[in-house]
Amino acid sequence: MNSISAECQELKQKYDECFNKWFSEKFLKGITKDDCKDLYNVYTACVKVKQLL
Image (tube, rainbow, N blue to C red):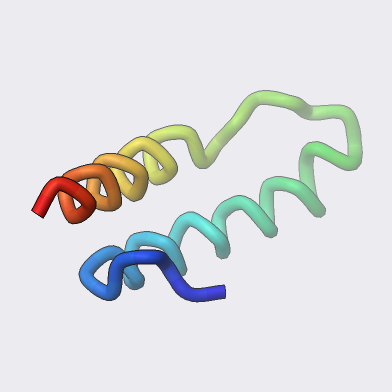
């Protein structure tokens, strides 16, 4: 799925890749520490800035 902001698409792809790997390799095995938190924060900050413009 694409980002709601084209300028943030690359960040979303990086976050999605990180999340999918974390979910399948760690979360489903009981490891709940979110390794993708920083990428998520950067992506959501990008989206918020673009919504203001």
